[in-house]
Length: 368
Ligand code: AHM
Ligand code: MG
Image 1: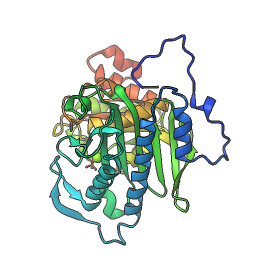
Image 2: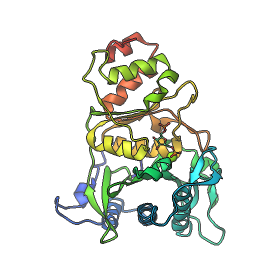
Image 3: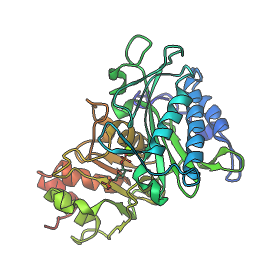
Image 4: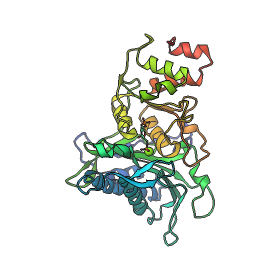
């Protein structure tokens, strides 16, 4: 089941579609889907399933807060700053608390880490510890809340690797390919939860009248080449020449491809989700001011990379596969090129092998 654990070629792979039999009109709750997915793994203890239920519950609670934010007069920034030196929105604080409170007592986790907290979040001593670690961004894109633009929650689950019951930093700093589950929730025109445990990427839409996530997007597949390019052009003057050339390529300005359409919400989950379904590339390159880009490896790039790969796409920092990067810090940033496989491959060729003329010409000659 687990990503990163190679399966011998001779062992037949059981797929979720072998176990979950449903038609396009079947009503499948996330709970039933998780239970049926667990049946793929006879040795499963149910801990991961329990963790996923708890995350779905937290998502519903956050969706409720996001939906009623204006009514409850809780919009606007607090005076607090988070560990990245950014102003927190009140909903960031709420979402952070909701996830911690929904997950800290279930006996499934040994520790958590959040974009909003500087260090490891310990499980309170009165609660049992489990074998997983949860890393999350409780409310990504929160600067968009005041203008009613979709925001999201992103999460990553890894297995504890150190001895002892409490989670350590070493447990948190694992390569993305070691993730056992990852997902995101988009609070948009509807609330959707998309997750993977390494058996495909599956999407569930919240039915607000039932309060249930229903399977709406089984086995998501992203197109190999995309329609949309999502990048913040305001950094153009800060980009290195090879990044400028890459963006010219995507726009068809060098004559080597049809131009992609530009779409940039500025809310990672919203941009990623649109491109996952419609095909395309989200790019947040390094620039001269931010040498490692802006986005965080462990709870933004890695979980989305796990999902996009499960959907047939790819994710790179321009040099290497996101899931292969060895983290060294909890809040580490990374450049990110994520989406349709062919479009990510172009970034890898034009940035990773920028010194190699043959690689560049494999994508096409680049404009100045
Ligand atoms: P946040 O985690 O502080 O909300 O920042 C992450 C957000 C992403 O959602 C989005 O893709 C990016 O920042 C936008 O950054 P920029 O305004 O530099 O384009
Ligand atoms: Mg974020």
